[in-house]
Image 1 (cartoon, rainbow, N blue to C red):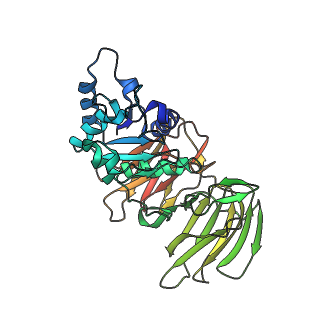
Image 2 (cartoon, rainbow, N blue to C red):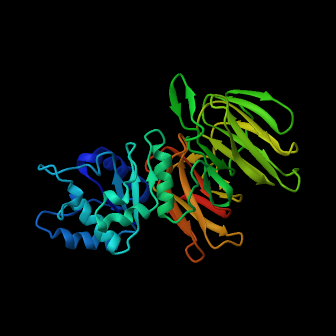
Image 3 (tube, rainbow, N blue to C red):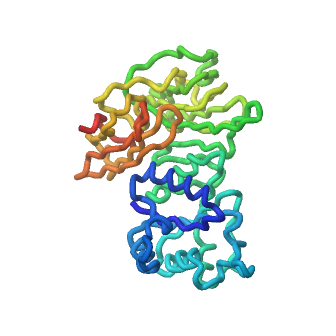
Length: 371
């Protein structure tokens, strides 16, 4: 997958470099086209531009506070100059019906149609993505998910993975402690490895379906819905600092684990008091190779330098299985791959992280080190 990055260097040069690094990490080498790097001296800019547009799944129009107001030395708006490279890139993309995604950074807003040249007015009808400094990695993960065709996320809601998995970005649930904001990252989990009682942090025993936990390191929440009623377990988790409840999992009839990368004090509650909920210290210690039979995440395991291989054994009636590899230390998405019948084995790159875990989409999967 290749994406085309369009931006003004004097407007968002720093953001563009940061976004390029993030995309390369998630999509792989040679996945980002930048004219300043890819077009060599002496090459025809428009020819190379058209070739890059043909090879790209989308154009990311990175828009900062100075994107619209950039001017020539004579004071004329650069966007209205016929040879302005940003205008050329976006006009050709829109004219060729290439997917164009406005990416807003630095507090910028999408320009009004009346402020744009006629050939660029279609830009305002394209769904924009906002990248915030405080939730940068989560926002980029959402952008990459959109480029891969995953479901969009309604504003103000958590990022829902397929089949009700959720990645909670901190827009509405920022943890504020001592004036420092931190994102609460909740990642659905379940899987292989041994279960252990809380050995770190402070666990408060409460009535069935309720409880609280103070974590000094990444931890997990084990949800046992085997004795629940017809609606299964629906669990919400509240960070003490924010006081905002967030739905962690719904319709849990078996056993699931939710892996939580942030620390602090939390309280959980289930709609069914027959749900057994237990905090587990740490991210788990699975040993390769192993078979993971539940949907959700595996326990964490040492990342092989050669890569992580996921081989689907059962699609459970589905047409594909989506895998995401996470950094166990901070919950960052490292790589994404999709297996389909006929191509049952995929390999994911841990990018040098020492410990990772794998999310799978309701499949039975054999996890091993890439040979």
